[in-house]
Image (cartoon, rainbow, N blue to C red; front, side, top):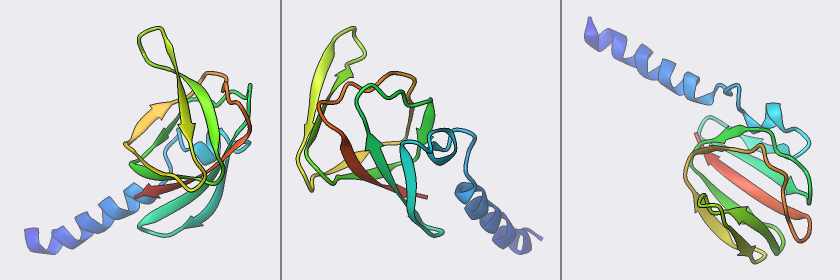
Amino acid sequence: MISRALPLLLLSAVVAAAVPTPLDPLKVAPHIYELEFENERVRVLKQTIRHGETSPVHAHPDRVMVYLQSCAWLEDDGQGDERMRLYKIGEAVWAPAETHGGAAMDVAQECLVLEIELL
């Protein structure tokens, strides 16, 4: 009985992982995120970060971020201070799963990023 249920259980897990959550960036922030590619294993989003724009709270799975242009912004360090984040064109950065947003972006210039989400 268990051996017959295992394939169905695994299929359910794969389908559930691909279903967008209520905090999906494409749903809550379509002014920032755009779908570029998606299959059962990966999803690629293009993110446009603009100065002063507020990103609603949203969630990401583990992902790789590739910067399509040089950009910089101030980021809260979680201890009441800010730090400057700098990225060069073509730079790839690993980003673990997180839920974030709700604050206005303080970027030096518009920034384009490809986010490769691992599903």
